[in-house]
Image (cartoon, rainbow, N blue to C red; front, side, top):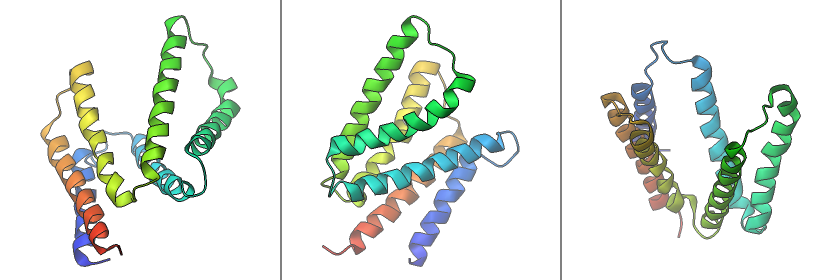
Length: 168
């Protein structure tokens, strides 16, 4: 890895620190969960890409959905609150939307290398900003905007430089 990519990775880390400055105001547990979650998503996407050469999309999605279902079923009895009325419909809707999204994501990783699909992951930040603004009337602050530009820019730089170096 060259110095430019290392610098881009450091810029991305700086962007994260700008978005969530280490002032002690944010819960350390919440930050650890967020970072761990992103690391696990990254590993899952890599596995999906590798498995897509041998497995059908439906098989990959089935096992990706079965694993968390089994894990949460083990701890659910201690924390379970039965949904009421419309909450059942909302849970079903979340399941259908999530399952459909997972099928589409898995299908997208089948023909394309990560360097092609990874830039689309950065639209998550834009969607989160839009939903936060439209649904909860949240206005992004300057830290989020500056940090977001650093994170997205550095991530795209790393992905694009890897794509340029990849054998064709």
